[in-house]
Every structure is written in C-alpha cells, then in structure tokens.
Length: 468
Ligand SMILES: Nc1ncnc2c1ncn2[C@@H]1O[C@H](COP(=O)(O)OP(=O)(O)OP(=O)(O)O)[C@@H](O)[C@H]1O
Ligand SMILES: [Mg+2]
Image (tube, rainbow, N blue to C red):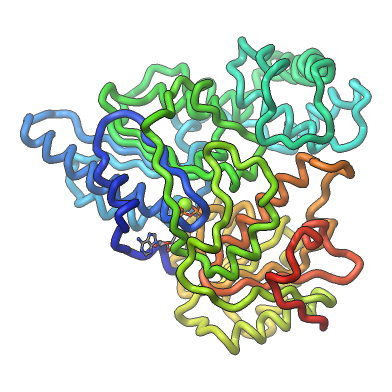
C-alpha cells in the first residue's frame, strides 16, 4: 500500500522546517494539514545539519534520532519517509517506535497487564463503590487520572479541570475522592502485592531509569493521545541541546489521555506553529465531518475541520441506509465504478474490530477483491492490496483515497444517556477523525432502526442519502 507522498512545502510549512532552534516545538493543525509530513521534512533537514556539525567538530557520539508514533501501523507508514534522512551512515542512530515498544525496552521488557485484566481489577473496585452503569467510562476516567498526574500527586485530580472528559456522567469532588480512595487505591495495592505493571507504570519506570543514551532530535506524532506521564518519560531521555517536536490535534484525541504543557513543564508560548490548509480532504468531506465536532471544546491544541481550507470541492459523501449486505455491496459497486483499485487506496473502517469484520471479509473474498488487515500491532503493508480493513482507532494518522464505514450501529458506538456524555464526545472525535482519513470519497452506512446516535449529528445538507 502506498505511503505518504513527497511534497513541496508551502510557506507556512517552510517556516516550521526552517525553525532549527534547539528546544521544544509544537505543530498544530487540523487533520490533513500536513503536520506529520512537515515534521518529517524538518527531521530530515535537522538531522543533516546535526550530522554536518558532528563532522565539523569531529564528535564521536552519533546523532540520535527518535520518532515516536502512537500505533505500529503509523510507524510503518512514516518509516519510509523518515528513512530518507538516514543514508546508512553509522553517525546516525534512527529509532522509529511506538511509545509502548520504546518504553517497554527501556523499562527492561517487563510483562505488562492486559487491558482486560486491568478492566477486571478496576471493575471490582467500581462495584464496591456502587457504580454499576458505564463501567467503561469510569475505567477510562481512572486511566486518565493515572496517566495525567505523577503518582505522588494524585490529589491534584480533586480540583483539576477534566479537559477532554465531557460533562457527563458528572464526576464531582466527592466522587473523585471516592475513586481515589476506592478503586484507584485498591488497584494500586493489588499491583504492588502481585508485582504487576500496567502501561502507565511502564511510562513511570521509563521516566526514572538511568538513560542509556540521550536523544538529539525527537518527533512525537499524534501527541494528543499521549499522557502527561508518557511525555515526562520522553523528556527524561533528551540531550541538553535536543530538538523535540510534538505534533498534535486535540480534536482528534480518541483515548482517555491528556497532555498539558504546564503540567509537564513545557512553556508553550512562542514555540507553537499552526498549519491552516487542508491538503488531504475535499471541501465536501471536511464539511461532512465538521458537525460531529463543531461544538466540542477545541482546546488550544485542537483545530476543527475547515472546508474553506481545502482546494478541491469534491462530491458529497454518501450515507446508505439498508441491511449490512446491501450497504456494503452498494459501496463496493460505487467504488469499482468510480475508482481504480490498482492505484487508489480504500479503507473499510469500523468502530470495533475482530468479528465485526467477518461479513466484510466474506463479501470482499466472494467478489475477488484483494484486501489486507491493519491493526494497531501491524506494520504498514508492503503488498499490492489496496483495500484495507481497519478499526477507526488504528486508522489514526493514516490516509486513504476512499473511506467506507458500513454498519455504523448503536451497538458499536455505545455511550451514556446524558447530554455532554464523555464517551459520546470521544466517539464523535473518532468518527470525524475516521472521515478525515479520506482524500477523495466517503461512504457511510447503517441499518434503519439500528443507527448510531452519531448519524443524527450529521448535517443532511452535507451528504447524499441512498435508501437501499
Ligand atoms: N504542501 C503540500 N502540498 C501538497 N500536499 C501536501 C502538502 N503538505 C502535506 N501534503 C499532503 O497532505 C496529506 C496530509 O498530510 P499529513 O498526513 O502530514 O497531515 P496531518 O496533518 O499529519 O494529518 P493527521 O492529523 O490526519 O495526522 C499528505 O498526503 C501529504 O502528502
Ligand atoms: Mg499526522
């Protein structure tokens, strides 16, 4: 499958590329504004400059570069570009990794609790508190708290603004205290008793080990889904005159995490760059995605999809209504009619993975359409299949010519009942992000009577409805 193409930077991107001061740098902008591409171009130029300086000064230490991405698929996707900075010279040590894999190595390859195990342990504590509904929300809340605050300062949670967590269910001060004293304390005690380590512990360990070596140039892509503790871990491994670039868009945050510059000790004033154009989507696609997130808290580090920033108008996305098979068959017919599957890429995206793809796999096989599957764990496929099955989570940061989202039912997008529900806000950001993967066309589908709440949020003026 094709990777990110080469491009000529525009003036706003060139300004970032030319900014070669050491220290921190933040690149913000909406989906498709070229944040990742610009950061990688800058990485290439900075690496070359550091290599020249190293030769001039006859330094012995290599130039150490670290590129951290959130999921492994994205790692494979940008590897190709990042490698262009590497001309096989041992003066350069280039590491491209996910935060998980990087910290796991540094923290001594300890075995880490599975998500299901964590869930089970925390669920017991929530039951004890009498919290019976929306366990997933509260488990996410706990992950958020543990990732945001250093272990000795969990009480800061009591009065903190819970940025990114929605307005409902309400988590007032007494409830926060109860979470700290109940499930969080018992989870911590159980981990200590059994010498267990979770992913946040891994970040904390990484922030406390003696660095083997320090990095000169670092890129953290999709930083909106990093926690404070993960960023604290990265900061612990920087050289004195490092150059570190965070690439993020808070509107695309899809995990219960929060990165706050003052809380990790970074002064964001004067180091932020914002990209405003949209090089990926058509205006019709950006217009379709906008209502999903338009009234959410954009935060300083977020940017809404902006149709005025796109150069091509494009056709309206399609929303198909019918049985799953009817939706998917219609989408494939349209795709085969309008697209060249040999040269154009397509993603079939779903809110959930595993068995939810069975039907799509069956239909694609029956029609003789070659496909590959992308998960958070997989590398970017190097084969010739140009159709990928992928969860929305795993598609973060990637792009495809065509995006198909069949079967958008309430069952795969569950959330709480109240206005401002935190889970619903996360789903809204996720669907907008998923739609924003598309360069040329988007088709979405649902079965009447089973549709996700997200469908109601779309603006009918921005799509063509097809009854099957
Ligand atoms: N100056 C440019 N001219 C033409 N195309 C560009 C330019 N800058 C970026 N692009 C293209 O725009 C697309 C989106 O770029 P990129 O993936 O870097 O965006 P992003 O801001 O990181 O998006 P996301 O938030 O979804 O991760 C890519 O295909 C890239 O090649
Ligand atoms: Mg990106």
